[in-house]
Amino acid sequence: MSKIIHHQIIIVGGGTAGITVAAQLTRDWFRRLDVAVIEPSDTHYYQPLWTMVGAGLAKKTVTERREGSVIPRGVTWLRDAVAEFFPDQYMLRTRDGKTITYDWLVVGAGIQINWDKVPGLKESVGKGGVCSNYSYATVDSTWEAIRSFRAGNAVFTNPSGAVKCGGAPQKIMYLADDRFREAGVRDKTKITFASALPHIFAVEPYRATLEEVAARKEIDCRFRHELVEVRPDSKEAVFKNIDTQEQLTLPYDLLHVTPPMGPLKFIASSPLIHGEPAHLCGPRPILSPLI
Ligand SMILES: Cc1cc2nc3c(=O)[nH]c(=O)nc-3n(C[C@H](O)[C@H](O)[C@H](O)COP(=O)(O)OP(=O)(O)OC[C@H]3O[C@@H](n4cnc5c(N)ncnc54)[C@H](O)[C@@H]3O)c2cc1C
Image (tube, rainbow, N blue to C red; front, side):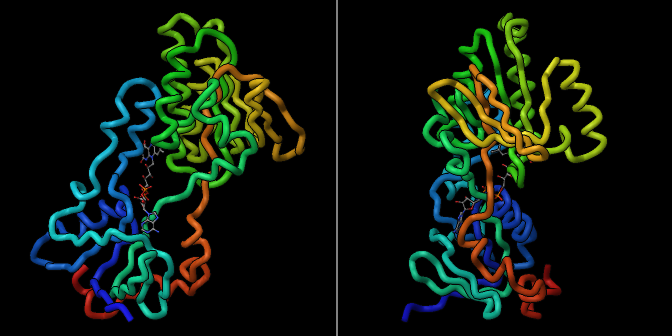
């Protein structure tokens, strides 16, 4: 049997959340906390900047860092992935078969992009006017589609369910509108925001302002419309009205897709989801006065 590794605090995921928590915990050196981050990837991405990359205002390479360069000093990086949690035993197991125990556990492994939940999307994204800021691999295709756009229908989607950054599906649309005006093609362009949500934004004060912005920019907003199919051959995006179940087919020249997202499998199937809350956040007593 392999040796058991122990750290006071284990952080799962060295993305924005994991690195921020690790930095906060180790800011005061005198606490001398023993913090380890479990992160399989060698590369850290600063995803919020992808909106600017899609709008041609930044290069995507600047959003990429060596993971080792963002791990705070004094924090141990365990280059592995978590496979299974055993919260009752304050323990987890990794993909490489290591057993790791902890006093505190912080889970920040992000959410998963489910391209294949929309038929036709996985095959078409990144070419033929179908683009998305939601991955490093496809973000350049957004700028390419906006930059080369001359006239026609520009459609921007927003799915139901949780997404990374509720504002990002709209931000790229406003930046595209700006670019179309600059390029002198806005009067030959119809912009549609097709969103599965009931309103333009869930938070009331922002909602009122954004409704004004969309009206001022002459954007056609369709709510409760979920993207259910992309037909790249005929350049059509198919939406389902969530209330009436009716289908709406929109021709597109540019289609920016915010894809459906959901939990990572190893989290969704873990006792972290189904367990009693006391199991999930209870520290071993030794640490509680320190944090
Ligand atoms: C286009 C776009 C625009 C955005 N704009 C904004 C914005 O303007 N403002 C804002 O606040 N936010 C914005 N966001 C959202 C922001 O980027 C995310 O909320 C943030 O990255 C989430 O951080 P995270 O650490 O939870 O996940 P991530 O940054 O995705 O990191 C998760 C980490 O967990 C790791 N991991 C995965 N599986 C395992 C495993 N089994 N074991 C261990 N580690 C694992 C991954 O390798 C990854 O490094 C935007 C996102 C996008 C895509």
